Image (cartoon, rainbow, N blue to C red; front, side, top):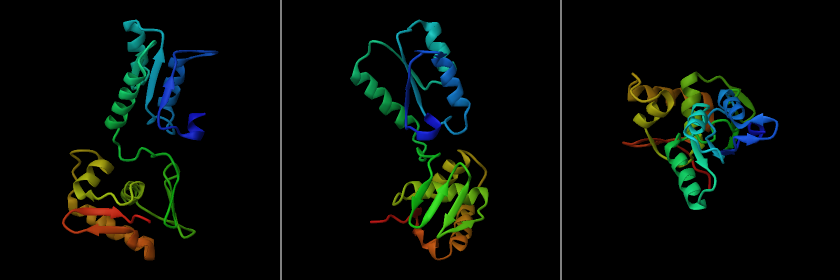
Length: 189
């Protein structure tokens, strides 16, 4: 089941035994654990009405059989480019540098102790920890955590980082400042 294995992408046929592919698509898109997994409908049904139903059910793309494997690969790559939501693994538990981050339970455990993080602290920490070594500007952090054009100043990110480091104690060094640019999560070697 998708909610147990958390695939990066789902290929779904409209005509599957015992249930409609449209129903499966709707179920996956309504389930908080699977709603962000991209779905490509692959089916022999190529009528305009079928395509519209598939896309309205939540499919990210729709392909009719037969199709070229090169076209399929190009569409998969396009979906991943579009979804550049830095957290492709937004539902997976992350284990790194003595820290466990569980995004579904919104729980962070550092060296066996559960941390009490605010919503913003959790979001920022999870964002940085998913891409160790990647440098995020303050603006990128605000955009990725709160959405574009959100009324938060870049300096509020600094305040959140200070709070995070304090709560992490000696593990606070995992969040590195990149002078004049922003922040990154320490990359293990």
